[in-house]
Length: 213
Image 1 (spheres, helix red, strand yellow):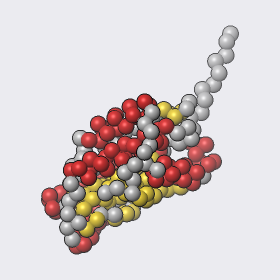
Image 2: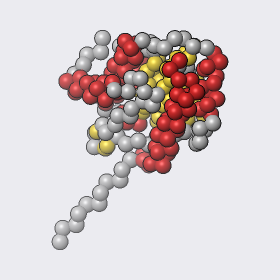
Image 3: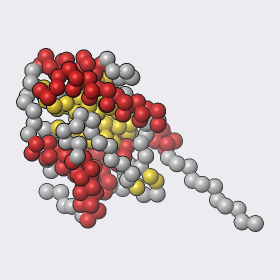
Image 4: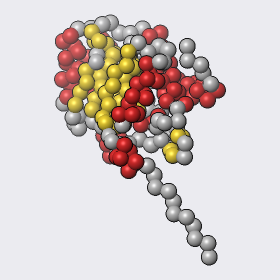
């Protein structure tokens, strides 16, 4: 079992409480604002792309709801206009229909369809998934070499999905954390890679020293 330090426990409780209200929602909640060393862990997408991703999630969720109603439970997560579909659909045709509906949403450039052909997950399974997501995020926050907010973490039926724009080093570190997290049965990476040089270029520039007269 992962030992929860006071910092991890506080983070886990905050993340779980924030995400708990969205257990039945189609668009997952985004939790951020972690301080990493001397830098604020900021999202690596442009502001415009972040707005587009939010719009994609909302429009896709509405289309799925209008066409399939309550017979499916689908989570739509968009990062940099790449959409991850998780959850459950009762038939393979329904699974394919969800992907077709989402593909017609404006600004979507790619879809990763991880929907399971099964009945809707129980409330206890969704709760366990939410707790697992919180634990993974808490593990990232506790490290000294990761910007936790560079990742989106989604857990569905015990499978942890990692999304983000990260270096290979960050991807490997985050994967190790997720794999060692209680409740994580499998880790799937839906990541876009950048170089260490690109990452350095994203870091905030230090303010110029004040010249005393």
